[in-house]
Image (cartoon, rainbow, N blue to C red; front, top):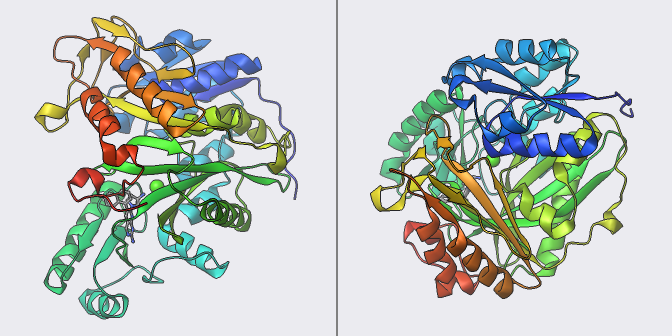
Length: 456
Ligand SMILES: Nc1ncc2cc(-c3cccc4ccccc34)c(N3CC[C@@H](N)C3)nc2n1
Ligand SMILES: [Ca+2]
């Protein structure tokens, strides 16, 4: 069934920070009116300043603003919007919110609610991918229920294993179990975390794969049967499940493995009936691949793919949401060179990465050839640690990885950020960029945990 075309002349942005500004910018370039919803502390942010209009949606507390559908829907309807862009985080992957938008005659910029619900359930997503022949790790076909089941399934799967929330994502609440005695305590902890973080305590087991790389594939699908991939992003350099550096192509990734990853992602998106921009995450070691989860949102690191391919993913999201056919095919997607993103967080690396907001007395992003900075910061802005600590994303392009890395080092060195109490992760990023092991492209997911790196 082909999507019908629906005209969008106003978009309500149900988000904040740099991604809200990113959506506003795409709207401006498309001649679409943008309306940003903001909470009290966000009244004078870059996104509010850039949007055509802005509507206050509630207090600082996310549960009564960015996470509160009645406030968001009411603001969207009052602003005359036909569509709601959820960004990432908050309600971006919440099927109920997508459903509420539809019930109120609003186009939700993302996949259908049922598709989001299926892919957002990690057990269902794993099962679907396995059924269409995509490799997954040994694990449970259902959420585990009860101590006996945990012990039996763990004996079948083997150790080490990882316990994950079925409704989870991004690594939050995961428990890695290396010996049998830690199984039941790990199971209980995982269930408490799952209930606390996601309001759903179902957990499942997977064999834990160490010394792997974390590689995700960007897909883009319209409502007329076209499903494309836009290449991969290596996200192995993370700290406590917070990605620090993302890059394309995957360093040392054999082309045959990259092709298989892309094919698996397209196969999964097509099987799920996916529409819009989505990401399929895999673990990779050598030529071994395992699917782990899918994301139904635009991701923080989407600029890496935009810079390498020249495709504006937010523009494409809005066109697909309006029922348009994609204007290009797979043969037109030709990633070039190397693109790298570093996330600059307002955290203090010297003090355990505690959030370190404050007034930005000095804020001068880098520039020069092939440097892009996506940020909501500006001189005089106050960065509130009320929400997340992401302050800026520095993305660079180079004809090869070495030149891109040199450019990133130069750009980060140029970034001037100062203010009372404001600290950022730039020093840590520079350390990583200068680390010969990172330069050699040999980092696995355990790199920053102090556990070492292995050959690519
Ligand atoms: N069966 C199995 N084995 C190893 C894994 C390794 C990761 C992983 C991926 C990237 C960074 C990590 C840092 C610490 C611990 C784990 C990771 C992982 N993640 C973490 C976040 C989410 N996107 C998927 N799932 C895994 N699953
Ligand atoms: Ca995820």
